[in-house]
Length: 310
Ligand SMILES: Cc1cc2nc3c(=O)[nH]c(=O)nc-3n(C[C@H](O)[C@H](O)[C@H](O)COP(=O)(O)O)c2cc1C
Image 1: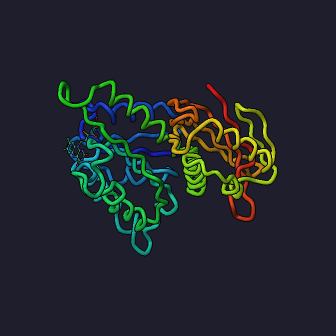
Image 2 (image 1 turned 180 degrees about the horizontal axis):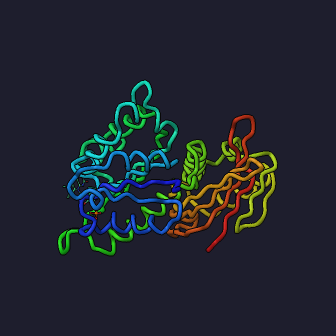
Image 3 (image 1 turned 60 degrees about the vertical axis):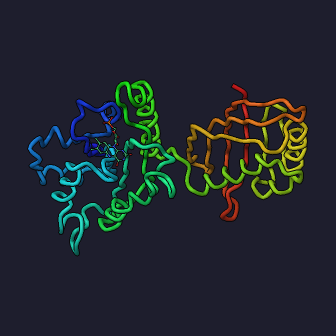
C-alpha cells in the first residue's frame, strides 16, 4: 500500500518537459503510486471506485499538474467532479478523506513576479489556489504548503531552454520530496531565520537586539573561532562589525530541517552573503550553516550555531 498517491492531471505527458520528469522521479519511490489520469482514462471516463480506493489507501494526496488557465487542467477537474462525491468526500457521512494531507504541486508558465498585484497576472498564486484550498477544507483534508515552480514553459527557439526547465523540474521534485518528508522548517522556524538574517543585513551597532534569539549557553562555531554564551556572541559580533559594512544581503537556500528525539530542531542551509567590507571592497561568499534550536518557554532560541566555509 502506497503511503502517497500522486494524481497527475497533465493531459499529454508525451509533450511535457517538466511534469514528465517530476513524475518519473516520483515513480522511483516505493511509497508513491502515480495515477496518470490522461493515460488511465483517454476517453475521460473515470473509474470512480478505483480512484476512491486509491485515495482511501493513501495518507498523502499530491495533485500534480501544469497550471492551465489559472486552474487545473480539464481531466483533473473531471476527476474532482466525479470522484469527490457526496457521502465520500463531503456531506454528513462524507468524511473518507478526513485528516489526509493534501499537497498541491504545480508547474506554472509565467514568472513569479507576474503573480502579484500590478503584475500581468494580477493575483498571487495563493489567491488563485483558494478554490483548491477550500476543497481541502470542505473535505476535511490537511492543506500543506503548495509546491509551485514558475517559468516552466519551454517553446523551442522562443522561450527558455530545455536544460533550464528540466533543471527547474529537478528542483521542484527536491522541494516536493522535502515537503513530503517533513524536511521543511515550520513557520516559527522560518520566522526566526528571517528575523535573524534581517538583523545581520542591517548590522546594528548594539548586539543586545540579537540576545533574545539565543539560549544563555549558546555556542557559536564559526570561521573566526568558537564563542560561548551571550558574552561570546558579543565578541564574535564585534569581529563581524570590523569586517563588514551595514547593508549586507543574505540569501538563504537549500534549507532542510529535522526534529531530534530530544526535542531540538536541527537546520541545515546555505547562505550567500553579499555586501561591502569595511575596507570598501565588494564581498560575496557562500557558507554552509547548521543550527540547533531549542524551545524555551514557548520561544524558539538558537542553541548551537555553526558556520563552515565550503
Ligand atoms: C492550455 C494551457 C494553458 C496554460 N495556462 C497558463 C496559465 O494560466 N498561467 C501560466 O502561468 N501558464 C500557463 N500555461 C503554461 C503551463 O503552465 C506550462 O506550459 C506547463 O506548466 C509546463 O508543464 P509541462 O512541461 O509538463 O507541459 C498554460 C499552458 C497551456 C498549454
